[in-house]
Structure formats: C-alpha cells, structure tokens
Image (cartoon, rainbow over all chains, first blue to last red; front, side):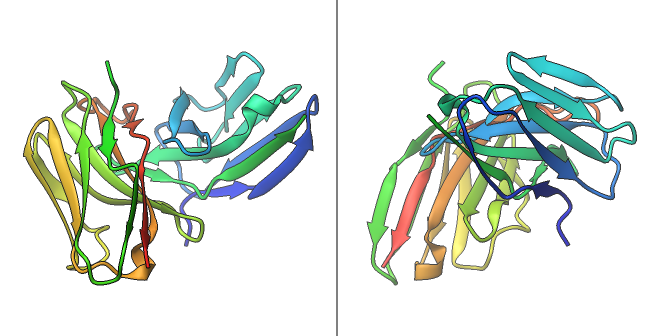
Length: 110
Length: 117
C-alpha cells in the first residue's frame, strides 16, 4: 500500500497553461515537503508545509497543505518549459527518514 | 559549498562484477542517506547513517548490498555480485540533525546511473 499517492503520474501541457498536481494519503502528517527533480539531477526541495490549511507561494508555484494534514496540492500558473521535471512529495518517517510519493512527471512544451 | 558529491556519474558493468558507489556529504551534516530510483518503484530509501553509524538498513534489498561510512566525509555503497535488476539511479543525500517532527531538508547528489548488463 502506497503511503503517498501522487496524481496524475504524467502530465504534458503547453507553455502558458495552468496545472495542479496532488499528493494524497489516509494518514496525518506533521509536515510535508515538495521536491522537484530535473532530468539527470537529484531532487531539490521546493517547500515545506507544516500547518493544516497552510498556503505557500514560490513565484508561479502555489502549495497548499490540507486542513486535516493528509494531503497537499501544487498549482503552477502559466507553466514554462523550465518547470519540466518530476515533482515529488515527501513526509517524515521515523528518525530523520523521508517517505516519497511516486511523483508526477511534468512536461511543458514550448 | 560544493553540495553532495557522488562518483562515478555513470557506471556500466557486467553481471557478477563488484560495483562501488561513492558519496561525499555536505560538511557538517549529521545524516547521510542512500536511495535507489527506478521507473517502476520510484525513490526508495536503502539505508541511512547518523554520525557515521548505520541506523536503518531495512531498505537494503539483499545481502549483495552493503554500505559503509568510515568517516564524516565519505560513504560507499557496494553491490557484490551485481545483477541486471540492480540497474537504477543511486542517490546519496545528506541533512542536518532533525529537530522535532518537522523533517529537515535533504540535499541530494546528482546520482550514479548504474547499468548492469
């Protein structure tokens, strides 16, 4: 059973479109992180959300933590080719471990 | 800071050969993680160290895999003997000591793409 389910798995859109990807679970988490992984590189942290209902913005990216702290969404406004990559959500586990979702692979075509 | 350094970036080997992957974490980080990433299984934690001591190796797939951290600035992941199903991208990551329930940022290296023929 996947602890974190990300949807959609794949998304291909044109430059300028808006999109939302989701990270869902039946468990409650103390915090949740979003990472972006570009082709040929390791994941890089985008944001950490810790409070239910919290909204954080990073330029054209908007992150929201669900009120019950079981899910999160990432919305990208006016997507650009540079947004192409694998978007991963992650939650803390025992110790200092992270459990990652399966990821959403985004391609933005010029 | 140079970030997490991994070598080699690419490794192609034949089934049965020994493979050693290397990692230099960010200086001052107390935690070091080894992950494996495949299309089928995503990003999986293999093992992690705290202050050079292995804490959880439950993700290591089998006895063919071993990891060491002889000092704070170096770790190795060894596969002996290697098999085609070990083909994947292997990442090393490091982080500062965790505080409370909030996870600290993990800083990933660029990965080693391993192909076992």
